[in-house]
Structures are given as C-alpha cells and as structure tokens.
Image 1: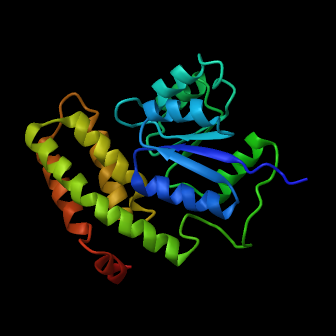
Image 2: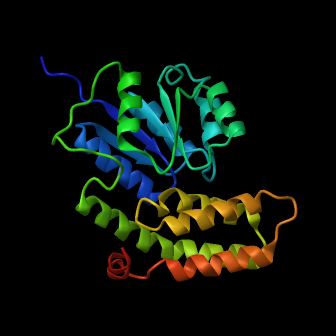
Image 3: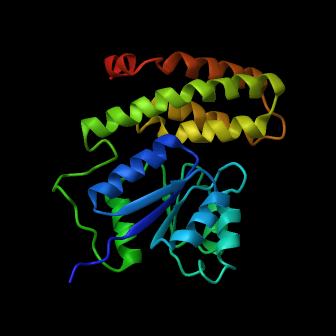
Amino acid sequence: MKSKIPFILIIDDSDVTRASLTRVFDEYNCKTESCEDGLFGIQKALEKKPDVMILDILMPNLDGIKTLQIKKVIDDLKNIPVIILSGNVNKSNMFAAMENGADKVLIKPFNVDELIGAVNELLGNKLEQKISADYQSIDFKDDVVSELQKIFINSFVSQKKIIVDSVSRRDKNKLRVVCHQIKGVGKTVGLPEVTDICRNLEFNLTSDKVDWNFIIKQCEKMFSLIPKTQMELKGEN
C-alpha cells in the first residue's frame, strides 16, 4: 500500500523563503503550496487541509499571531499542526505563538535537519529523502543556492524602492516589515552582513524615538553590499 504524500502549506511573505522551503520539501517527497500572508493562508488551508503549516510571524495584512488566533477557532483547521519559522522570534513572540496554538518555533535562517525533524515529529513518521545527502543548511545544492540568489536579487529591486520611500516618509512600520523580509534570507543567499544590518535596523525601529540618521546610514551600507546581478554575488563569495 502506497503511503500518503505529506502536504505542507507554507505561509511567508518572503519569495526566497517560500522557494527554499519548497525545494527542501520536494527533496523529501512532500507536496507543497505557498501563500504570501495569513489571510490567503487561512483560505488555502480551508480549501486544501494541509498536514502541516509553516508560518512566519511578521507579515503584511494578517501576521502569524493573528493567523494562529483565527485558525484555532475554526473547527476544520484547529487540529492542523503549525511550525512557526521566523527571524523575529523574541520571548514575547514565542510566548504569543505557543499560547495561540503553535506546535514548534524555529528561527531563520533555518537548519534543514532541525526543520525536517520537527515535521517528522508532528506527522508521527519519517519523511524519506529522494537523494541521500548531508544537509547542514539550505545551501545543500549549488543549483538551489543559485536559484535563491536570483529570486533575492530580482525581488530586492522593489524592496529597495520600498526602503527609500519608507525612509523619506519616516514610515517605521513599513520599513520594519521589509527589513524583516531581507533579514530572514540574507544569510541564506551568502550575504550574512546584510542579515546583521537588517537585524540592527529592526531593533532600532522598535524604539519610540527612532534614530533616522542611523537608519539612513545603515540602509546606504546595505545597498552597497547587495549586488545588482547574480554574477556579482557569485564573484564576492
């Protein structure tokens, strides 16, 4: 008798994270679908009934905590296990996530073994790999990393415009969201310094009194570090 193929629903506003998770679960013979925010995630979950949901915390429209709050009062969804996967996991967010029904909380950039172990535990069985390999992090294949780099560079064009506009308007909430997105994938695509900058920006933007001179300098530094083409990125690593 053929075993059921696990279905994983990925809810994350980062193109790179969605792509990387999709590639990982494909290597483990899982079916996946993905959504950019919690509202579409709830709709997709009702339609498809996934075996496990992978959920980010900081997203536009409907964030991860609010998504959990809605999910736990819907009978058709309340028993579906959820793994929180976020770069914004402080004690407050972790407590809120667990209180509202998250089964596991993992931190970006994620470790594949840890992620698959969490999914195995929630499913109650072991996912089978297509190819035996020693996975230490998402960069388990050169072609996967290359694909993620391309997605990241293409998406950064629009993200940079949002950053410039947010700084000019002093819109710290919008800026914090885009910094969170970049922070979660910078290290994955070979730009750990960018992840560190975005982490510092996020921290500064949570303050009641934002130091905009610091913000501007950090953004300029980030722009100088992010290559305009994939060839430039490969040349730096």
